[in-house]
Length: 261
Length: 126
Image (cartoon, rainbow over all chains, first blue to last red; front, side, top):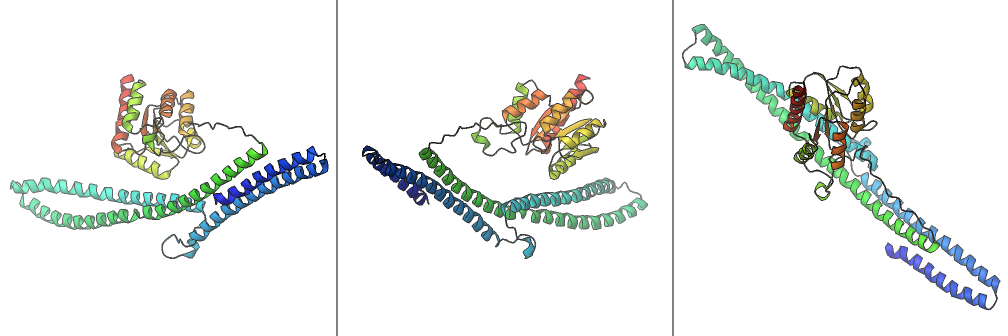
């Protein structure tokens, strides 16, 4: 692609050089109307060149986005093959990631919430039984207490069996919920591809714009973008390579204690 | 002890709420950013504030500054639980008067430690 882009501008530069020589020749012999005609031709060529390049890049960008959308029609998200669930653009896809991860987190926490009381109840009952079981071993139980314990153990064993089934099923649900990683991973990879594609094409656009600027003599002032800490930056990626970012709670604690905390 | 949990993600609020419950703090309320948190604080029943940094609307650091600037609220202990880990940010949180700073992802132990430390300090100052 860069060759195609480059050639238009190379041709244009050649045209400018040739035109300049011709222009001088015309001026030297006093043929001003031909000279002005050449200036006009050069000006037109400059415009055409610019529009051609921008047009080409716009088409490339459009193609990249269209290709992405066609690809995405293959991906059906959701349980079963509900065709209404087709995700057709990157923003919807990322929203899907947010919803899926949120739903998985909530279902997992639901399962934890329903398991904790079961485990606590098992613990409570087992502790009480063990106390009386100890007395049984010490032969410290009255016949009535023994009959009572006999029944309680039966009840406990049934409860333990049922609890284990509940916990087992909750753990399985938690396991299955982790499938979100696969689904969202695929979606994010696709969006990543689109971003890479678009970025690549934008870099070409910037390169062309730069050359157009250089031949048309336009200068831009570079603005330094300021980072605002107040708004926050979100989780740091590549922490290891950034000396400004602390890598662990320990480092945060050290910094705070150096500040007198 | 009534604790206000401020985070824009409901899952994170739920995690913090569950951890606090395990630590024996069962009385919690929630808000999803500084703008919704301030009126709850101003109602005057909150004893402890746990806040995220990065939130739409009013951020955690702005909320912290607003709390410290408010005569009625300025003594409420504030614990930040956030993914923001830049040196400058932690320094500005300290300067704004944060009482503890926990970076995400965090452990139950880290949260417990920081909360206990904050209460120890408050008790020692009494």
